[in-house]
Amino acid sequence: MNSLPPDVAERVLASKVDAQARTDRDARWLETTVNALVATFYFWQAGSFLAVVWVGLRVPTHLVGRCISKGYFADPQRERHSAKWERRFATSTALDSTLWGLGCWLLPPTGSPLLHGLLVILVGVASSAAVYGTQLWSVVLAWVLPMNIGLLTALLWQGEPLFLFMAACVAINLGIVLYFGRQQQQLMTQTLMVRYEKEDLANQLARQVKIAHQANEDKTRFLAAASHDLRQPMHAITLFGAVLEKELAGHPQHANAQRLMRAADALSGSLGTMLDTSRLDAGAIEAAITPVALNSVLRALSQTFVPDAEQRGLQLRVRATPLWAFTDADLLQRMLSNLLENALKYTPQGGVIVLTRARRQEVWIDIVDTGIGIAPEHQEAVFAEFYQVDNPGRDRSRGLGMGLSIVKRLSHLLGHPVQLHSRLGRGSRFRVVLAAAPPQTELAPPLEAPSAPPIELSQTPNARVLLLEDEMDIAQAMQALLNAHGIELVHATTTAQAYQWLEQGLARKQPFNALICDLRLAEGADGLDFAQSLHARGIVPPPTLLITGETAPGPLQRVRQAGLPVLFKPVTAPALLEALASMLNRS
Image (cartoon, rainbow, N blue to C red; front, side, top):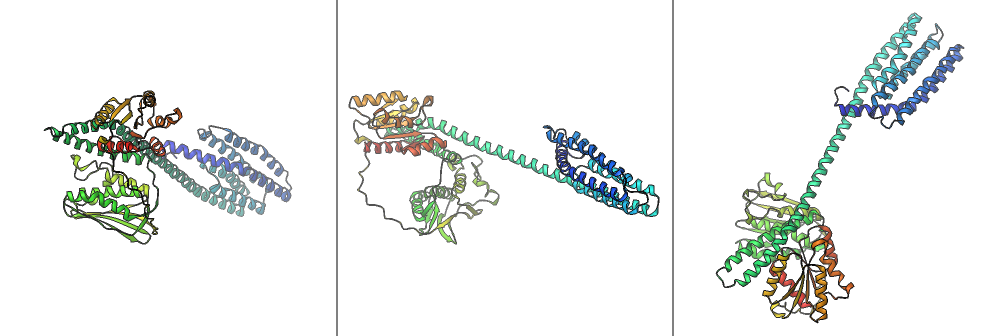
């Protein structure tokens, strides 16, 4: 025990003392019963009243042991007082053993080998039982030594060769018991020490996991907060840039306005990537797994990426397939889009091919490129956030390094493992493994009346739009953009002002044709709550568009349940104008 660390030694001792207390409590009545039976037997054989005296002495020793046992279990701080209780259990046991040693003198009559031999057997069995039934070395010694010393001296006192032989046997057995008892105690101590070391390691691991989980949550909250706070000014920059680009058409500075918008679009794309990451980490995206015809997903990929591949001078082949799989079509398309975009980005010449194959109960979608390849030491790291091979200078034209990180998150969400095989300088193959689904009957799309062509904003004279926005810069930028397209924009900074404008418009028979609301407003106000409260105030709400920079799962879930169209900041001018044109068309 002295070689153990102090804290481990205390825990080991406390555990052994507790086990000893429970053993002592259960074994004490058994020992008293054995005492009574032995005394009765010797009284019957020898007729000595010393046997009665001997068993009577058992009563106080039994009561002492019971009091010690009860006191231990009543002690609320017994683990801290383990050394004290060890001494008390050892003392109680020494009293019991001394009584047995005294019985070796009192019970058998002089010159009776048979009755002395019975005690040799009883003491030998009791001593051997201590090896496995006693938890503390001090208690082992307190139990074994007094009774054996009493028996040895009683046998030696007889002086005859047979008794001397029995004494020798008792001495040999005592040595064996002490040797193996010591070994057993050391083994028990080592077992407890390993157990507590494992518990400490498990606790340390749990703490590290908790710290890592907390760090991941902190990172997610930081990304969400930073994304929201950066989207506000970026939203205004995008709208002001669109206004400048329109007003400078034909002016020498128009090229600079276009460069400004390209930079703004690149930054908007980066913020969109951060939004996807934070939404996945926050659990705001849920997968709806259904049987999906993979050809529809591949067809959408081809339409999206073929122009980009041609612009890069690359060949892109997406082979059609009749296969079906269990997946979420939208999330799978996003996952494959990131893989395909990554393949095109790192393929300077040649091309990319997308293949789909059936393998037993699985469907493999392979994206194979003839690009630069990935060295073995980088193949696991490329799925980490912001990791890019051979881009120490963080060239912004190569993106943030988040595409494969999003692929990894979507892989876990959908249950689609992603396998990577790559050879440096020869290209890479990313394989997505899906569960195969039986082919379904695809219903022909219902015939629809031809929709009217989209309305240009310039074709909607006298259109009035109410904007509920607490950020003045954003309101001014949106006002400049819509005024440039012939739309009257009325700005309300609070929900009270917005109610007032709506009621005035109805009273003057100049209702608003559309309502644009920011989701998060000053002083805890909420644009969605405002839009949903109009019916309760007797106001028929105009077509409503929500604009937000939120990434937290709670608000996003509310938006989805509301069923209102939503745009995420920073909103590009074309996206805003297209959404507004659709709303005015409905109006």
